[in-house]
Length: 241
Ligand SMILES: [Zn+2]
Image 1 (cartoon, rainbow, N blue to C red):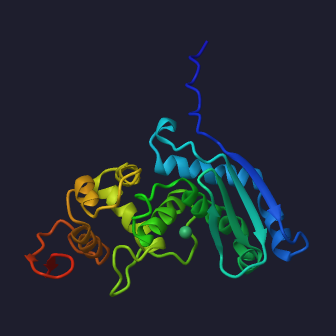
Image 2: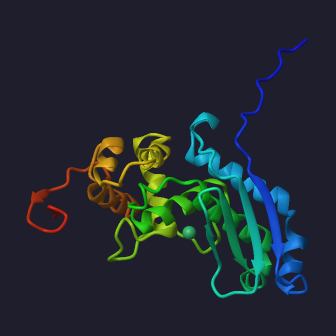
């Protein structure tokens, strides 16, 4: 007899609920033609656990239920609700607008929103751009980055510009400082206020220095090159030259 494989880790799966506010909306038809709601939500929960937490023992257990609301609204999606009961509102118009790649877009948006149900946020003190960066970092790792995403940085963009800009940066930090670094950052934000020093503790350098190295790397330069750093009296306390 071959040895029995170890059991799949038991992640704390919440109760999953669905509400459709306009079943006869074209977006609802596309949704049900593209994905199975239970499978799609389950996959989003598992992706969030997998990329935010090393083991089921580390995963938060406060989320008892997630309600997905498909409805007519502006924008793409947002997450609301209480500590224990989460609601994800998803725009039916957005689903219609994405109909040529509806399945990937629906799954990708669900992953992004479910991350908001499970990520730590430093008692609410983590920068909004970092919070959004985590969500798109997980979406990227789930293999659901949309075709318009590019690993690039706008001229004056900061590291916490958010969304895929910060998501790709977090991915680069993981590659540079070791897989699990981003999970470590999420863990540090559990019940403790955000501090920029968290980056230095996990990845060895200040976040602005990492950002500078990331941009050099994207431009095809040597990210390990010595950077001339001058202490100064700017808001950041130092200047990269
Ligand atoms: Zn978001």
